[in-house]
View 1 (tube, rainbow, N blue to C red):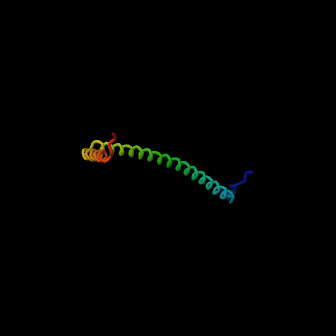
View 2: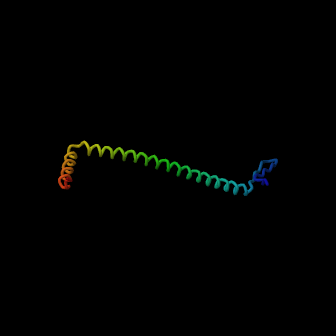
View 3: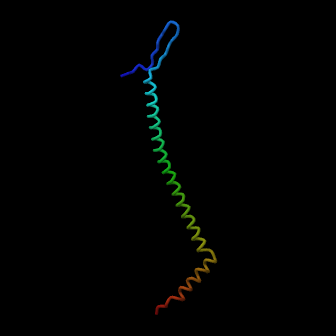
Length: 101
């Protein structure tokens, strides 16, 4: 059913326009529904993109953690002080372990 939302009266002197109040209610309702739809879409996309950003940050963190661990292991293996400490530690373990005959 189509409601007459806009009444236009033609007089000889001027044109009078009256608006049916139901059109205002329908316009407000439609704008609220559209806002709800946009808000839901925004949150869906925002959560998706937020998940993607978290995934990217996690992957970058994982890569940097691997790089840092490898650098640390390289420093441990090639630093002279750590070589001396490893040598002394191995000697100590070898000294205290009983020899097999």
